[in-house]
Length: 175
Image (cartoon, rainbow, N blue to C red):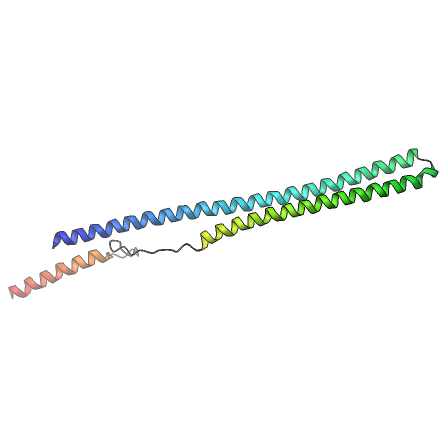
């Protein structure tokens, strides 16, 4: 009977150790998943910053080109040719604007596809993270951890109860 109780205690302890290992593994997987989400968010922020810089660069280039053209007209073109230059500039601007608009639309479509892929990855990661069940295993060999003087685990309490029952039987027999 004592051997069977010892085997049960040993079995419960082994289950507790396995449960603790499973909890550590789950926590490690959670940390890895959280890091992956954080990396995706950082990458997305970097891409947005780069896009803003490219837009500013585009505006500066257009302004420089316009300033250059205006200086050439003021310095070299006679009044007679001003109308011709103006029409040419308008045509060039219109073509550049159309080209930039087409490039911008392509870039927006590419960014939209890329953003959708990232969001899909994030959604996939979140579904893995959010739907993990949390398993709480009761370990009868540990105490509540409240720091009380007579604090004991369930197994210790059962052992003491058994000892007290045997002692009472012996006292009854002696009477």
